[in-house]
Amino acid sequence: MQMKDLVNALRLDLPRALKLLEVMVNMDSPSDDKTLVDGLVHFLGSHFQSIGGAVEYVPSDRFGNHLIARFNGPPAETRVLILGHTDTVFPAGEAEKRPFRIENGRAMGPGVFDMKAGILLAWSALKALQPLPRPVTVFLSSDEEAGSSSSRELIEREAGASGTVLVLEPSLPGGALKTARKGVGRFTVMATGRAAHAGIDPSRGINAIQEIAHQILQLQRLTDPLRGTTMTVGLVRGGSRVNVVPAEAVIEIDVRASSNEEAARITEAIRALRPHLEGAALHIRGGFNRPPMERTTETGRLFEIARIVAQELGFELQEGATGGGSDGNFTSAIGVPTLDGLGPIGDGAHALEEYVEIDSLPERAALIAGLISRV
Image (cartoon, rainbow, N blue to C red; front, side, top):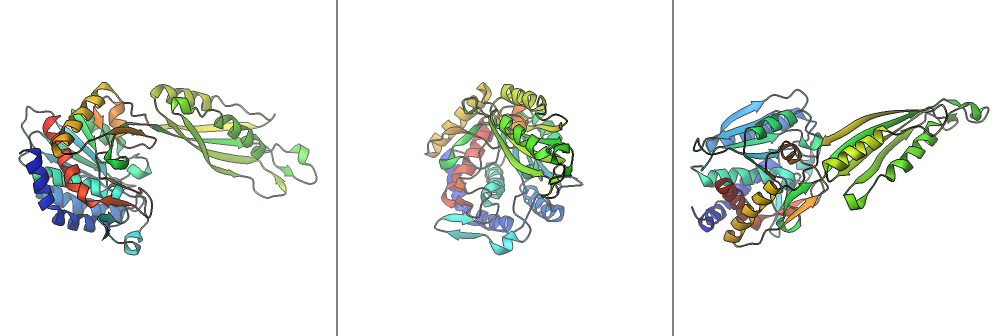
Protein backbone atom coordinates (compact mmCIF):
# COMPACT_ATOMS: atom_id res chain seq x y z
CA MET A 1 0.00 0.00 0.00
CA GLN A 2 1.32 3.46 -0.91
CA MET A 3 1.83 5.96 1.92
CA LYS A 4 -0.85 8.29 0.60
CA ASP A 5 -3.39 5.43 0.39
CA LEU A 6 -2.45 4.36 3.92
CA VAL A 7 -2.94 7.80 5.45
CA ASN A 8 -6.25 8.23 3.59
CA ALA A 9 -7.49 4.93 5.06
CA LEU A 10 -6.42 6.11 8.51
CA ARG A 11 -8.27 9.41 8.04
CA LEU A 12 -11.45 7.54 7.14
CA ASP A 13 -11.05 5.47 10.32
CA LEU A 14 -10.37 8.52 12.53
CA PRO A 15 -13.89 8.83 14.04
CA ARG A 16 -13.72 5.23 15.29
CA ALA A 17 -10.17 5.77 16.54
CA LEU A 18 -11.29 8.82 18.53
CA LYS A 19 -14.02 6.75 20.19
CA LEU A 20 -11.35 4.30 21.32
CA LEU A 21 -9.16 7.15 22.56
CA GLU A 22 -12.09 8.55 24.53
CA VAL A 23 -12.57 5.25 26.36
CA MET A 24 -8.85 5.00 27.11
CA VAL A 25 -8.56 8.56 28.48
CA ASN A 26 -11.66 8.09 30.63
CA MET A 27 -10.05 5.06 32.29
CA ASP A 28 -7.80 6.34 35.09
CA SER A 29 -4.46 4.51 35.23
CA PRO A 30 -2.19 6.03 37.88
CA SER A 31 1.08 4.15 38.35
CA ASP A 32 0.30 3.38 42.01
CA ASP A 33 -3.17 1.88 41.47
CA LYS A 34 -2.73 -1.69 40.22
CA THR A 35 -6.45 -2.38 39.92
CA LEU A 36 -7.10 0.59 37.66
CA VAL A 37 -4.03 0.00 35.50
CA ASP A 38 -4.90 -3.69 35.13
CA GLY A 39 -8.34 -2.67 33.91
CA LEU A 40 -6.84 -0.55 31.14
CA VAL A 41 -4.24 -3.21 30.29
CA HIS A 42 -6.87 -5.91 29.75
CA PHE A 43 -9.04 -3.51 27.76
CA LEU A 44 -6.10 -2.77 25.46
CA GLY A 45 -5.13 -6.42 25.30
CA SER A 46 -8.53 -7.30 23.86
CA HIS A 47 -8.13 -4.61 21.19
CA PHE A 48 -4.66 -5.76 20.14
CA GLN A 49 -5.97 -9.31 20.08
CA SER A 50 -8.83 -8.24 17.81
CA ILE A 51 -6.33 -7.21 15.11
CA GLY A 52 -4.29 -10.41 15.27
CA GLY A 53 -1.98 -10.00 18.23
CA ALA A 54 -1.09 -12.93 20.49
CA VAL A 55 -1.53 -11.26 23.86
CA GLU A 56 0.36 -12.01 27.07
CA TYR A 57 -0.14 -10.35 30.45
CA VAL A 58 3.03 -10.33 32.54
CA PRO A 59 2.13 -10.20 36.26
CA SER A 60 3.55 -7.49 38.50
CA ASP A 61 2.96 -7.49 42.24
CA ARG A 62 3.47 -3.80 42.94
CA PHE A 63 2.36 -2.23 39.67
CA GLY A 64 -0.15 -3.11 36.99
CA ASN A 65 0.46 -6.07 34.73
CA HIS A 66 2.60 -5.49 31.64
CA LEU A 67 1.12 -6.13 28.21
CA ILE A 68 2.87 -7.91 25.36
CA ALA A 69 1.15 -8.33 21.97
CA ARG A 70 3.06 -10.33 19.35
CA PHE A 71 2.21 -10.08 15.66
CA ASN A 72 3.52 -12.54 13.11
CA GLY A 73 5.17 -11.60 9.86
CA PRO A 74 7.56 -13.13 7.31
CA PRO A 75 9.88 -15.28 9.46
CA ALA A 76 13.07 -14.17 7.68
CA GLU A 77 12.48 -10.54 8.65
CA THR A 78 13.81 -8.92 11.83
CA ARG A 79 11.33 -8.10 14.55
CA VAL A 80 10.32 -4.53 15.43
CA LEU A 81 9.57 -3.68 19.07
CA ILE A 82 7.01 -0.93 19.69
CA LEU A 83 7.41 0.42 23.19
CA GLY A 84 4.90 2.34 25.31
CA HIS A 85 3.32 2.54 28.76
CA THR A 86 -0.18 2.40 30.19
CA ASP A 87 0.37 4.34 33.43
CA THR A 88 -0.14 8.07 33.89
CA VAL A 89 0.82 10.61 36.56
CA PHE A 90 -2.78 11.55 37.39
CA PRO A 91 -4.60 10.17 40.46
CA ALA A 92 -7.76 8.11 40.57
CA GLY A 93 -10.80 10.30 39.93
CA GLU A 94 -9.03 12.68 37.56
CA ALA A 95 -10.88 11.41 34.48
CA GLU A 96 -14.21 11.98 36.19
CA LYS A 97 -13.19 15.59 36.93
CA ARG A 98 -11.72 16.20 33.47
CA PRO A 99 -13.20 13.65 31.05
CA PHE A 100 -12.14 13.36 27.42
CA ARG A 101 -13.35 16.23 25.30
CA ILE A 102 -12.71 17.78 21.91
CA GLU A 103 -12.21 21.51 21.56
CA ASN A 104 -10.97 23.44 18.51
CA GLY A 105 -9.51 20.38 16.85
CA ARG A 106 -7.77 19.16 19.98
CA ALA A 107 -8.43 16.04 22.04
CA MET A 108 -8.01 16.77 25.73
CA GLY A 109 -8.04 14.81 28.98
CA PRO A 110 -5.68 13.24 31.53
CA GLY A 111 -2.96 11.18 29.86
CA VAL A 112 -4.13 11.88 26.31
CA PHE A 113 -0.70 13.18 25.21
CA ASP A 114 1.44 11.06 27.52
CA MET A 115 0.69 8.57 26.24
CA LYS A 116 -2.72 7.12 25.47
CA ALA A 117 -2.84 8.69 22.02
CA GLY A 118 0.56 7.07 21.38
CA ILE A 119 -0.91 3.66 22.14
CA LEU A 120 -3.79 4.46 19.79
CA LEU A 121 -1.30 5.30 17.01
CA ALA A 122 0.40 1.91 17.34
CA TRP A 123 -2.95 0.08 17.29
CA SER A 124 -4.13 2.09 14.26
CA ALA A 125 -0.86 1.54 12.37
CA LEU A 126 -0.89 -2.23 12.93
CA LYS A 127 -4.56 -2.48 12.02
CA ALA A 128 -4.05 -0.57 8.76
CA LEU A 129 -0.86 -2.38 7.78
CA GLN A 130 -2.23 -5.95 7.70
CA PRO A 131 -0.73 -8.23 6.54
CA LEU A 132 2.41 -7.12 8.34
CA PRO A 133 5.69 -7.04 6.40
CA ARG A 134 7.66 -8.28 9.40
CA PRO A 135 7.08 -9.57 12.95
CA VAL A 136 6.15 -6.87 15.46
CA THR A 137 5.98 -6.92 19.25
CA VAL A 138 4.10 -4.28 21.23
CA PHE A 139 5.26 -3.94 24.82
CA LEU A 140 3.27 -1.67 27.13
CA SER A 141 4.79 -1.28 30.59
CA SER A 142 2.71 -0.24 33.58
CA ASP A 143 5.35 1.62 35.62
CA GLU A 144 7.22 3.94 33.26
CA GLU A 145 6.13 7.05 35.15
CA ALA A 146 7.39 5.44 38.38
CA GLY A 147 10.85 4.53 37.06
CA SER A 148 10.24 1.18 35.28
CA SER A 149 11.63 -0.88 38.15
CA SER A 150 9.41 -3.89 37.42
CA SER A 151 9.57 -3.67 33.63
CA ARG A 152 13.19 -2.81 32.78
CA GLU A 153 14.41 -6.40 32.58
CA LEU A 154 11.46 -7.35 30.38
CA ILE A 155 12.01 -4.35 28.11
CA GLU A 156 15.68 -5.17 27.65
CA ARG A 157 14.84 -8.81 26.94
CA GLU A 158 12.30 -7.91 24.27
CA ALA A 159 14.63 -5.31 22.76
CA GLY A 160 17.45 -7.85 22.62
CA ALA A 161 15.26 -10.08 20.46
CA SER A 162 14.44 -7.21 18.08
CA GLY A 163 16.35 -5.31 15.43
CA THR A 164 14.66 -1.94 15.97
CA VAL A 165 12.76 -0.18 18.76
CA LEU A 166 10.09 2.45 18.07
CA VAL A 167 9.01 4.42 21.15
CA LEU A 168 5.51 5.90 21.42
CA GLU A 169 6.43 8.77 23.75
CA PRO A 170 5.03 12.19 22.72
CA SER A 171 6.84 14.16 20.04
CA LEU A 172 8.83 17.31 20.59
CA PRO A 173 7.03 20.59 19.72
CA GLY A 174 5.87 20.56 16.12
CA GLY A 175 6.18 16.78 15.83
CA ALA A 176 9.97 16.41 15.93
CA LEU A 177 11.29 12.95 16.87
CA LYS A 178 13.66 12.34 19.77
CA THR A 179 17.06 10.98 18.76
CA ALA A 180 18.76 11.69 22.09
CA ARG A 181 17.68 11.76 25.73
CA LYS A 182 19.52 12.57 28.90
CA GLY A 183 20.13 9.89 31.47
CA VAL A 184 18.34 10.26 34.78
CA GLY A 185 19.99 9.84 38.16
CA ARG A 186 18.44 9.84 41.62
CA PHE A 187 20.63 10.21 44.69
CA THR A 188 19.97 10.65 48.42
CA VAL A 189 22.52 12.23 50.74
CA MET A 190 21.95 12.04 54.49
CA ALA A 191 24.01 14.07 56.95
CA THR A 192 24.11 12.96 60.58
CA GLY A 193 25.39 15.07 63.45
CA ARG A 194 24.60 15.29 67.16
CA ALA A 195 21.54 16.76 68.86
CA ALA A 196 21.85 19.35 71.63
CA HIS A 197 19.76 22.03 73.36
CA ALA A 198 19.80 25.09 71.11
CA GLY A 199 19.73 27.51 74.06
CA ILE A 200 21.61 25.84 76.91
CA ASP A 201 24.52 24.11 75.17
CA PRO A 202 24.46 24.45 71.37
CA SER A 203 28.23 23.97 71.15
CA ARG A 204 27.79 20.31 72.09
CA GLY A 205 25.73 19.74 68.97
CA ILE A 206 26.78 19.02 65.39
CA ASN A 207 24.29 20.71 63.10
CA ALA A 208 23.27 18.28 60.33
CA ILE A 209 21.34 20.98 58.46
CA GLN A 210 24.47 23.15 58.36
CA GLU A 211 26.40 20.17 57.03
CA ILE A 212 23.82 19.43 54.35
CA ALA A 213 23.84 23.11 53.34
CA HIS A 214 27.56 22.82 52.58
CA GLN A 215 26.83 19.73 50.51
CA ILE A 216 24.07 21.45 48.53
CA LEU A 217 26.40 24.26 47.49
CA GLN A 218 29.08 21.78 46.48
CA LEU A 219 26.62 19.67 44.51
CA GLN A 220 25.18 22.62 42.59
CA ARG A 221 28.68 23.44 41.37
CA LEU A 222 28.68 20.11 39.51
CA THR A 223 26.11 21.45 37.04
CA ASP A 224 27.77 21.91 33.64
CA PRO A 225 25.48 23.29 30.91
CA LEU A 226 28.16 22.94 28.24
CA ARG A 227 28.28 19.18 28.89
CA GLY A 228 24.51 18.95 29.16
CA THR A 229 24.64 18.10 32.87
CA THR A 230 22.20 19.44 35.45
CA MET A 231 22.08 18.88 39.18
CA THR A 232 18.91 19.73 41.09
CA VAL A 233 18.47 19.36 44.84
CA GLY A 234 14.72 18.96 44.81
CA LEU A 235 13.88 17.89 48.38
CA VAL A 236 15.38 18.90 51.73
CA ARG A 237 14.34 17.50 55.11
CA GLY A 238 15.95 17.95 58.49
CA GLY A 239 15.62 18.61 62.21
CA SER A 240 13.04 17.68 64.79
CA ARG A 241 12.26 20.87 66.74
CA VAL A 242 13.26 24.49 66.39
CA ASN A 243 15.05 24.51 69.76
CA VAL A 244 17.13 21.41 69.06
CA VAL A 245 20.41 21.35 67.13
CA PRO A 246 19.44 18.98 64.31
CA ALA A 247 21.05 15.56 64.32
CA GLU A 248 19.87 14.57 60.85
CA ALA A 249 19.19 16.16 57.47
CA VAL A 250 18.49 14.59 54.07
CA ILE A 251 18.49 15.84 50.50
CA GLU A 252 17.21 14.13 47.36
CA ILE A 253 18.88 14.97 44.08
CA ASP A 254 17.84 14.78 40.43
CA VAL A 255 20.72 14.50 37.96
CA ARG A 256 20.52 14.63 34.16
CA ALA A 257 23.48 13.75 31.91
CA SER A 258 23.78 13.64 28.13
CA SER A 259 26.47 10.97 27.93
CA ASN A 260 27.56 7.85 29.77
CA GLU A 261 30.89 9.56 30.42
CA GLU A 262 29.15 12.42 32.21
CA ALA A 263 26.91 10.03 34.15
CA ALA A 264 30.01 8.23 35.41
CA ARG A 265 31.73 11.53 36.31
CA ILE A 266 28.77 12.80 38.30
CA THR A 267 28.24 9.47 40.06
CA GLU A 268 31.87 9.39 41.15
CA ALA A 269 31.74 13.02 42.35
CA ILE A 270 28.62 12.44 44.47
CA ARG A 271 30.00 9.28 46.04
CA ALA A 272 33.25 11.14 46.83
CA LEU A 273 31.51 13.78 48.98
CA ARG A 274 33.05 14.23 52.44
CA PRO A 275 31.77 16.05 55.55
CA HIS A 276 32.70 19.68 56.17
CA LEU A 277 31.96 19.75 59.91
CA GLU A 278 34.06 17.82 62.37
CA GLY A 279 32.11 14.89 63.77
CA ALA A 280 29.48 14.90 61.01
CA ALA A 281 28.94 11.89 58.75
CA LEU A 282 27.46 11.40 55.29
CA HIS A 283 25.42 8.44 54.01
CA ILE A 284 25.01 8.34 50.21
CA ARG A 285 22.89 6.07 48.06
CA GLY A 286 21.44 6.05 44.57
CA GLY A 287 22.61 6.11 40.99
CA PHE A 288 21.44 6.46 37.39
CA ASN A 289 18.21 4.53 36.89
CA ARG A 290 18.02 5.49 33.22
CA PRO A 291 21.24 5.59 31.17
CA PRO A 292 21.62 8.33 28.57
CA MET A 293 20.18 7.69 25.13
CA GLU A 294 22.99 8.98 22.94
CA ARG A 295 22.49 9.73 19.25
CA THR A 296 24.29 7.00 17.33
CA THR A 297 24.88 6.30 13.66
CA GLU A 298 22.06 3.73 13.77
CA THR A 299 19.73 6.27 15.37
CA GLY A 300 20.56 8.66 12.56
CA ARG A 301 19.82 5.93 10.00
CA LEU A 302 16.41 5.31 11.56
CA PHE A 303 15.61 9.01 11.56
CA GLU A 304 16.55 9.28 7.89
CA ILE A 305 14.07 6.49 7.07
CA ALA A 306 11.41 8.33 9.08
CA ARG A 307 12.21 11.61 7.30
CA ILE A 308 11.76 9.99 3.88
CA VAL A 309 8.44 8.41 4.93
CA ALA A 310 7.27 11.80 6.20
CA GLN A 311 8.17 13.44 2.88
CA GLU A 312 6.04 10.88 1.08
CA LEU A 313 3.21 11.73 3.46
CA GLY A 314 3.62 15.42 2.65
CA PHE A 315 5.33 16.89 5.70
CA GLU A 316 8.85 17.68 6.90
CA LEU A 317 10.15 15.84 9.94
CA GLN A 318 12.73 17.22 12.37
CA GLU A 319 14.73 15.64 15.18
CA GLY A 320 15.85 16.87 18.59
CA ALA A 321 16.98 15.98 22.09
CA THR A 322 15.26 16.18 25.46
CA GLY A 323 16.21 16.18 29.12
CA GLY A 324 13.47 13.72 30.04
CA GLY A 325 14.00 9.97 30.14
CA SER A 326 11.92 7.13 28.72
CA ASP A 327 12.09 3.36 28.39
CA GLY A 328 13.90 4.04 25.12
CA ASN A 329 16.94 4.92 27.25
CA PHE A 330 17.19 1.25 28.24
CA THR A 331 16.93 -0.16 24.73
CA SER A 332 19.40 2.32 23.27
CA ALA A 333 21.91 1.63 26.06
CA ILE A 334 22.03 -2.09 25.22
CA GLY A 335 22.84 -1.27 21.62
CA VAL A 336 19.48 -1.73 19.87
CA PRO A 337 18.70 1.06 17.34
CA THR A 338 15.97 3.17 18.95
CA LEU A 339 13.82 6.01 17.65
CA ASP A 340 11.75 7.93 20.19
CA GLY A 341 9.03 10.57 20.14
CA LEU A 342 6.82 8.77 17.61
CA GLY A 343 3.71 9.61 19.61
CA PRO A 344 1.20 12.35 18.86
CA ILE A 345 1.71 16.05 18.19
CA GLY A 346 0.44 18.09 21.11
CA ASP A 347 1.63 19.61 24.36
CA GLY A 348 1.14 19.74 28.12
CA ALA A 349 2.45 16.34 29.25
CA HIS A 350 1.69 15.85 32.97
CA ALA A 351 -0.28 19.12 33.01
CA LEU A 352 -3.97 20.02 33.18
CA GLU A 353 -3.89 21.53 29.68
CA GLU A 354 -2.59 18.34 28.04
CA TYR A 355 -3.84 17.88 24.47
CA VAL A 356 -3.17 16.28 21.08
CA GLU A 357 -3.82 17.69 17.61
CA ILE A 358 -6.53 15.47 16.12
CA ASP A 359 -5.70 16.17 12.46
CA SER A 360 -2.15 14.90 13.00
CA LEU A 361 -3.17 11.45 14.26
CA PRO A 362 -3.59 9.72 10.86
CA GLU A 363 -0.21 11.03 9.65
CA ARG A 364 1.56 9.93 12.83
CA ALA A 365 0.02 6.45 12.60
CA ALA A 366 1.07 6.27 8.94
CA LEU A 367 4.61 7.31 9.94
CA ILE A 368 4.80 4.38 12.37
CA ALA A 369 3.41 2.04 9.71
CA GLY A 370 5.98 3.27 7.21
CA LEU A 371 8.81 2.65 9.66
CA ILE A 372 7.57 -0.87 10.36
CA SER A 373 7.63 -1.51 6.62
CA ARG A 374 11.08 -0.12 5.91
CA VAL A 375 13.47 -0.43 8.83
